[in-house]
Length: 183
Length: 141
Length: 182
Image (cartoon, each protein chain N blue to C red):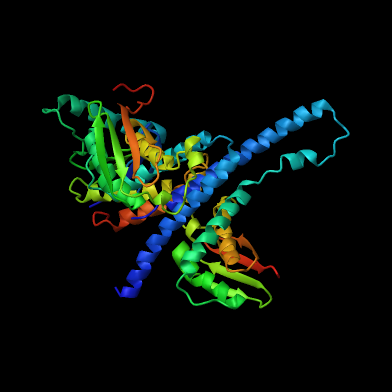
């Protein structure tokens, strides 16, 4: 590969990140106009994230045949940080703050691509806008698709710190069996 | 070597897709009935084999084989189940199933499906993709 | 690594359509209540004005416009100064298109009177549609934001234009760029 094509490739990756993040920013701005309460925007972002996550789950599994099937929260956290988040957000993530007998944990994003190009006004944050809730919603949606029910929220970002997603494991979901069949 | 037919089920047991290539004998059941039985058998085999498992570990049922055919299973972590009937000595079927899963995912995430959940999945698109994958496999014909 | 733009875009379209539906439902409900009041002296268009709402496509186009304005700054940063209208449109069809939509356009034509027709035989947001004519109506939603992107990019380069898409058979798309005289 010539250095020029390489350069273009790197550029287009960067552009896709910029297209994604700017579109997200413009979308949030529009939503703030539509909803009076920034808290409602957070709820909406969580919903959108959830829908995206449940679709990304199959996409991720289809592309990564070698990812082992998770049986506990430690493994889930590991796959999220090591494979899924770098794959879709292009950043590294680490897991920390285990508590409640491994039911609660935090994922720390090394940097947050969503907030890289935008400045979220502090008054909106204090009014309840959680700008990165899309990521938390996506994690919740993706895990629910693989039968793990969790609660996930983006810890309100204070300027200059890493983004933290707090996750609480709720329960393992069982597939419903079609009527007339016994387990 | 032959690849006979394939079923794709969602996690509720709804048959999302079916196609066949060299299936010369039909089951004599209505399609719906056949789908139900195939899915039910798979569930039963899963729970039966779990009960009989000799160690407490995460196990999967991979296939069953008769003297004339082999039915191979794939279940994704999201609960999508793909079953394929082939010649008993066919190999590389696991990879084939994964490719079909990829094709299914792409169709499920295609633009037409993403905005309207009411729209019937475009069968012909998936059908041609699956056919492409299956006919390319060395075990086809 | 790939940002799931397609999935964000689809989710954006879904939400825009949903809120359009909610608003038109609210509007007709209000109509009923309002008609019950029998206030004849109120000007006819008032309700329409009071509830002037943008439809899903307009909303998506607006988002695209804003994004296009910022994106073009990043693409044009290292390029030589663009002077003529033709140079600018060519730049949009080459560098901008490649960076944002991942490929070059297949054809660009102009009547030299401010109308440009850009042809893309496999436009990125339509590439996962089944080929043919079945989904042409749905595909319009997937072109609103891209049209905004193009209009926004042109606007940042000082060209006011109207951008409209036509689709005859998916996933091929034609964009008509009509330059507005200053």
